[in-house]
Amino acid sequence: MWEIINDFGEATKRVIKAGFDGVEIHGAYSHLLQQFFSSYSNKRNDYWGGSLQKRMNFALEVIKRVQEVANEYAQDDFIIGYRLTQEEIHEHAVGYDIHDTLQFIDRLADTHMDYIHVTSADYGKEIKEVINGRTAFIFVPHVFNVQDAVDGLQYGDMISMSRQALIEPDFAKKIKEGKEEDVATEITSPEMAKSLAFPPKMVDWLLDPKGKNPVPKGMDYLKEPVSD
Ligand SMILES: Cc1cc2nc3c(=O)[nH]c(=O)nc-3n(C[C@H](O)[C@H](O)[C@H](O)COP(=O)(O)O)c2cc1C
Image (tube, rainbow, N blue to C red):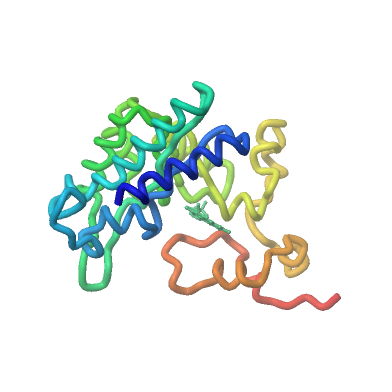
């Protein structure tokens, strides 16, 4: 366990050496850190598991190590964030629910990290309340247009988006330049779909019927082949 924690520190060292402004510790989407927070995958009965508080220990030790490395090797303004997924609900079992997550966020907010980033739109209000200004909250409201982004800021100190940014790579730039009406908010033709040049594997993933998030408009155009 301590070797892996140390590896997170080594990775942070490489990030600093490579000149990045910061590092986001990935505790979301069922990656390793989430597997330890989840009672579904973590069956240990020692310092690393057995109770909700103990299931937080791996993440908290990783954060501590990353912070130690940053303190030693990085400039004071080096950014450290943590990304997590609000809930892990399986068909017949619950890995953790929002009540567990809010307790976890409460602990995370006390670690002096720079931000907490959650992966989906649920529970923005509750998360903002728990953080209560102790650190920044990056919220993912599922942005499909400019108003969605503005609305998301009632909970998040920042909002992040991905699929809308793929449809309109100049989303932020156009808003900054006051050209909101020029922001593309959907795929409107097979030609536009083609011009976005998404790799085929990404298209399959974007159209995966098992996806849980609401889908931006016009994604179906990605299915239609356009001949040259
Ligand atoms: C092409 C693509 C790649 C993504 N890659 C990652 C990733 O590497 N790590 C991650 O935590 N989330 C990743 N995500 C998920 C997004 O960060 C985000 O949580 C999710 O898409 C919901 O936001 P949206 O409604 O703005 O798309 C990816 C999303 C897309 C569309």
